Amino acid sequence: MDLQHHIDTQEEVISLEDLIGIYNIVLYNDDVNTFDWVIESLIELCGHKAEQAEQCALIVHFKGKCCVKKGSYNDLKPICEALLDRGLSAKLED
Image (cartoon, rainbow, N blue to C red; front, side, top):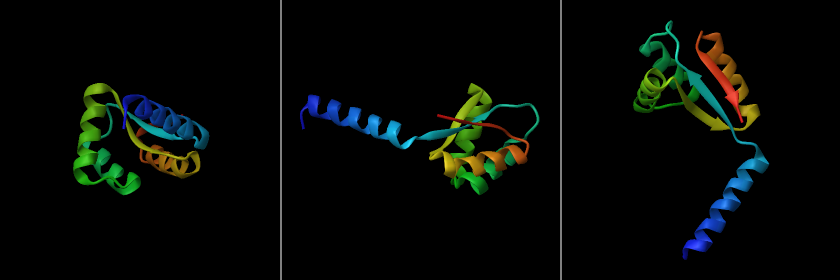
C-alpha cells in the first residue's frame, strides 16, 4: 500500500467517525476521590481492566484529565451520569 492510499484511507475513517458521532467521556482530576475509588468506578462502569483503569487514574492525576471511554452519545450518556453520581468529575465531549 502506498503512502497516498494510506492517507486517503485515514481521511475516510475520520469522516466516518464524524458521521456516526464519536463522543468521549473525559474524567477530570479532583482533590476528593481516592485512586482506589476512581479505579473501581472505571472498572465497573467503563469496563476497564485493572491495568487500564490504573493508567487512566494516573493520567488524570498528573495531566488533569483523561479520555476514559469512546462511543456513541446514547451509549456514553448513562455511563457519564453514573460516574457523576459517584462524585467523579466527568464530562461527555464530542
